Image (cartoon, one colour):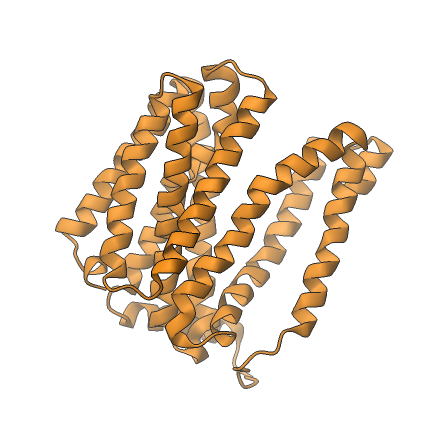
Length: 308
C-alpha cells in the first residue's frame, strides 16, 4: 500500500487485492492468536485475559485514527502506510519472545480430516453451536453501526471529518470501558445470561443511536453501545474458550473466528445495499431491533446459552 501510494498508481482494485491477501493471512493468524491466549494464563484467569486482550484492539481504534490523521496531514498517505507496516515488527518481536505452556503434538492427518474433527466436536458440545451462531449474528448486526458511522457523520448530521472522528473515538472509548468492566468482574457466574442481557441492551442503544436527534446524544449512545458490544464479545469469547480443550482449541477457534469475522463484512454488504434504498437511521435501527429480539429469544425460548 505504501509503495502504491508513493508512486501515485493506487487504484480501488489494488485495495481489493491487498485486502484479499490480508484476509487470507488473518484466516491463519486469528485462530492462532485466539488459541495462544489460554496457553499464557491459568484457566481461572481466562475471562480476564480475553477482556484485557480486547483493550489493545480498541485502544488502537481510539489512538490510531488520531495519529493517522496527523501523519496524513503532515507526511502524506504513503508515510501513513509505511509507519503502519513498520509497527508490525514490534508484534513479530513479541511473538518470538512468548513462551507457551501447551505445544500440540505434530500430526500427519489431512487438513480435511482435522476440520471434520473440529466440526464434530462443536456439534457434540451442547450449547456451543448456539454460541457460534450468536457470534455470527452479533457481528452481522452489531458491527454495522461502526461501519456506517461515516454515513451518519456526513449525511445524517452533515458534519465535518471531526464529527466522524469524535463518534469513532467515543465508540472505541466505550469498548475499552466495557473490556475493563468484564476484566474486573473476572470469571463471573452466568456469563451466557449476562451476555444475552448485554446484547438486549446493545440492541436498545443501537436503536437510540440511529434515531438520535443530535451529535452529542449520538456520541453518548455510541459510547454506551461500545460498552455493551465489547461486554458481549468478551463474554461469548470466554464461553467458547472455557468449553474447549487444548487439543481442539485451534480448530474450534477457527470456526468461531469464521463466524465472528464473517458476520461483519456480510452484514455490511447487505446494510450498504439497504441504505442506498432506505434512510440509514431506519436500517441501523432495524438492526438494533433485531438484536434486541434475538437476545430476548435466547433468554426466553432457546435458553441453552442462558444457562452457561
